[in-house]
Length: 403
Length: 167
Image 1 (cartoon, rainbow over the protein chains, first blue to last red):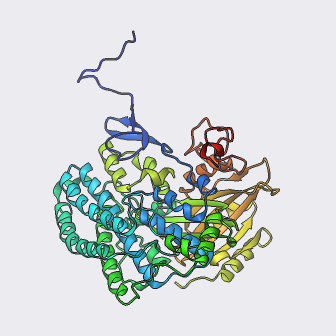
Image 2: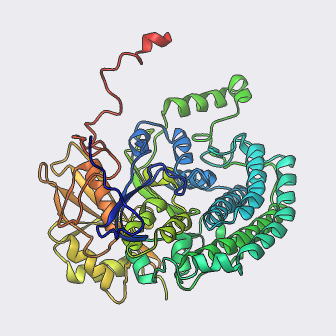
Image 3: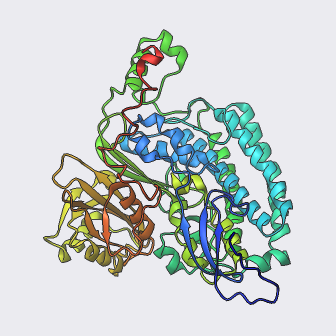
C-alpha cells in the first residue's frame, strides 16, 4: 500500500502541480495534449504534444495521382474542406498552366466563402460555449447545416467534400443548389446579427475575453501567424487581397482587422469576415448571371475526366479516360508554391513535380500547425480558464495540425 | 510600395552574397536560389532586416530527398516580404551522412516547429535548436519516414497481394 498525501482545506500546497490537459479533454475540442505546470490556477509552463492523429498525408501523396490527392486535403481542416480542395486544384492548375473560365472561378469563390462561414460559425460558436453561453452555438449550428446541404447539392457529400476536379467542377450547380444558396443568404444575416447582439456587449463574455491572450503584431509575425489571428493583432495580411487567386480581384470586400490581438478581437474579426464572405457571395451570384450557364470546367481533356456515358460511346473520351487513369500524360518538371486564404490562415501547397503522375514531394503549409506553436509559450502566466478560451479562439483543427 | 522585381532582388542579394549563392531559376515567377549551410543564417538575417526587401515573414521550412544526388537532403525555406508582396525560395543541400544545418529559430520563433517537423521526417539536425525532438511521429521511431528509401507500406505484408483480389 502506498501512502497518499491527504490534503485538507487548510494545508497550503507549495509545490506546483502537474495537469495533463488532454489528449482527450472535453474543453479542448480535439486531440490536443498539453502538460501544464500549475501554481494554483495559474500556468507556470506548458509543453504541447501533437501528432495524435498524424496520417502521413505527405508520404501517401507521393504515391497517388494528382486527382486522388483531393480526398487527402479534405481531412486537413475538415471544418472547411472545400477551401483545401480548391487550393489543391489551383496548385495543380498552376503547375499545368490551366486557365479556368470565369464562371468556374466564381463558383469556386462561392464554395470557398461558404466554407469560411461554416468554419467561423463553429469557432465563434464554440468560443461562446467555452465562456458559458450555449445559445449562440446551437442557434448558429442550424446554418452550418444549411451550408452542408448546399455542398450536398453540389458534390453529394457534406463534411469531407472532395468537391471539384482539376480544371473545374465534376458537375454543374443545379437549380436547387442556387435556391438553397439564396435562401441561406436571406436567412443567415438576421441570425448573425442576433448572434452578435448576444455576445458583442455581453458583460460576461466581454469580461472573459477582452484582454485575454493579447498578442502583438511583432510576436504574431515572428511566430508566422496568419489568418484571423494575425489580422486581430492589426495587420491586414489576407492572401485573397494580397495574391488574388480564383478571380478574387474582381470582388469588392474589406479585410477586417482588430487592435490588440486578444480573444475578443479574434471573435470580432471572425464575425466581420462572415459578413464580408456573404458580401462576396452576393457579388459572385450577380457576376454569374453574365456568364454562360453551361460552363463548369476548363477545356482540358488531358486532365479532366470525361463523363462516364461519353467514355462508353466516344473514342476520344475513352482515350483520355485511359490516359488519365493510367497516368500517361506528361506533366512539367518543376516546382510550385500556391497558397489560399484558409479559414485559419495561409494554407500553402508546395509541390515538386518530376514529370510523373504523382508529386515527387508535396508539402502542406498548414496554418493550424504553425499557429498552434505559440500556444504553450503564450499560456505562461495565464489562468487555466483563460488558456482554455485561448485555445478555442485559436481554432486549431486537429486534422490540420497533424496532417 | 511598389513590387520589387526578381532582378532587383537578385542584384541586392548578389551585392552581399556574390559567391555564396547560385540561382536555380524562377519557376512560376518565384525566385529560387541555393546557398550553403555556412551562409544560410546570414542570408536569412540579411533578407529579413534589409530595409528595402523586408522578408519579415517566414512562410515555411520543409525538406526534400533526392537519393541519387551527392547532397541528397535539401532544406527549403519560403520567405514572404509582406511590404513588397514578393516571395523567395531558398534551398540548402546537405552532404550525405552529415545532415547538419544551423537553426533559424534565432531569426524567427516560428521556425521552431517547422524545423522539428523537418527533423522528424528527414533527419536534418538543426544545430542550436532549443528543443529538437520528433513532433508528429512517436519518439522511439528510428527511421525518417519521408526519405525515399522508406516504404509507404510494409513490403512483407501478405494480406494485400494481388491474387487475393483476382488480379
